[in-house]
Length: 193
Image (cartoon, rainbow, N blue to C red; front, side):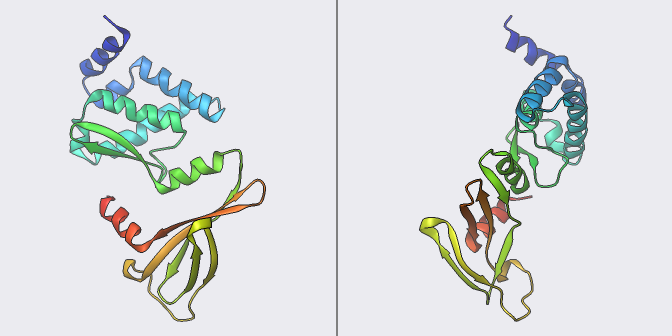
């Protein structure tokens, strides 16, 4: 029997997702990936924390509990491979597709991955452009030319948001502005939990 078949069999024979995630090769794969991607040596502690956070999330969703066991293994390994966490709001989310758990990297997770890039100096806080703000964006060069907030009180509602953006400052002090417009925000919100 191949090693992959043995692993799959061990996961299927586990009585629960919790038990499946405690199988030796799951822990080993997580730790190896996590420590190699982050350079840290706290893989075992991080593994136990991520299993706890992951189990909390699937406890809230009965459908996730019954998903394919191998996909639960893959979800935990994804946390190790990225160094991101199910326990930090906006980093990782388990999403059910049919009977398979897929892991979605949230906006905060993507920002954290960008911060780790060696050529990134700084990632600015996100900014919101509201109706009434003066806003000009050079789309071809990914640069905000002008953003002056309106003097008027504008409620922060989805209908009042024209765009949102953040700035990446590179090591050479050049910058790139990442802008998401209203229609993209609405589309992303409709897909979000």
